[in-house]
Image (cartoon, rainbow, N blue to C red; front, side, top):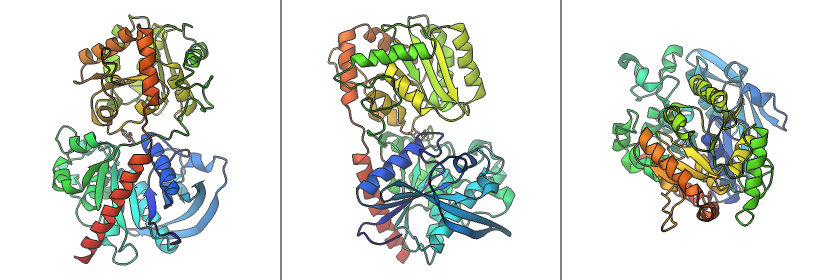
Length: 493
Ligand code: GLC
């Protein structure tokens, strides 16, 4: 990377980056963190696969490498690299190879191990070839888990490069569910990764990332403690405990330029904390669009996470019938990649509770409808069983939709229980993950909603909270500095 600034250079290696590819919050994190870092004056490069659906999108890109190649075992693969500017000082480099990424799937092929192995090798190969050696490589989740090991073993090009491995979701450790891998096939995580095609699909990429990175972090302080325990450690708690001195928690932020009800182009009526009456108009407009009963006073509850077990849908399956006895509405926003059983469940609820429940699903996550839902809803469900950070609750707060949340991970760091007497707190929290406690929290929210003036005050105060990237981005810079220091010390050994 051009060494024209005194500040170090940063590369992110990620399987997703907004606005080009996204299945979860990680895509937003890479985008907004890069923006902040480039504003701080760092030079940032983001490496990500060129999936079929990105290829078909209309946007300006330049080819910066036409035919590079690399070998995995005896097989040779060629690839190209295309570049697009994301922000001043921040570019995305797409790794292009149709055999690997031509289909429109981000995950879920039968050779994901090979695809992401290739992706990481190609990224490093391109850096070497173009003499774009970063000072720090920031690796996101399993898809970048081999990079720290490759870099550590490099005697030449990456000798001075430090690595940070961020755990966004510890459940995903490789292409196979880690708990289903027979013990004979389990990856020890030591030495160079295998190159045999079958063995590649059994690599535990996350384990290798944790074992080799100079610094490891997860996306909230609370979760950094949780992952050291068997309950949340996903079988890697012992390894994490051994490397505890390198494990940190940095909460994510949200981008207030993008997530702002005052300027958001997707919502029907823009508003802010001093024009809250327009929030109600958003509710009426969404009710009309989604064919719900039109009523300003009926509490509307949103839900917009991945339709997966982690996000608490099983809890909703068990409780929605009870909840829906009250006068309220539920709006679910998601994408069709969600678990079929859950999608079917919500569809059934739409039929059963006509005018009270709506579901809006698209092939790719519909950000526009999510915004409309945040703007229209009074409350927002985040009953996640576990949640490393969670981004949607920060967005919902900015739009004045009050979270009903499980006290876990990043939810616990960002949402404090509301007390109507002291008027402190910004959400309705339940401690133990079970139907009863969830129902109590939801009922408290609905009861409190009846006291409109205190509710408005709660909304007003919650909208004013700040979960910006300013502080987290500075913390990452500190972690990078630590990683560079450690790399120096370890390099000399
Ligand atoms: C994963 C986690 C979520 C976190 C996001 C971004 O999707 O499940 O909690 O907010 O990554 O770090």
